[in-house]
Image (cartoon, rainbow, N blue to C red; front, top):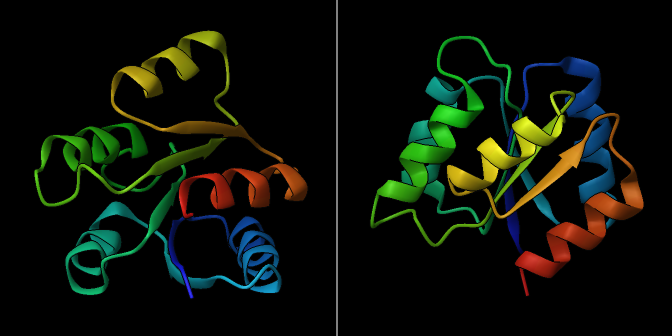
Length: 120
């Protein structure tokens, strides 16, 4: 079973995404901040990271950059899920190493399709 690390501080959004992923057969590790997510990455080695941009403390953009600069984590696919989805935000996320960008509210079929694409 593939494991997805979800970094999302919105309770409703986190519950919706988690249920969608679990119904599709994925294991989900939930965290509400980058600070909570960092040890999970090294301890649990997720197959993919779903990452909000606006988080308490460090932003999702900064965390994505850090993950992609680190040799131990740079191969983990990062999918940004955010309401911040202007062309500038999408370009910025791509430049920082995001593998894909999904706009909130999340379309469940698009979420599952994107996650499956990167976890084959």
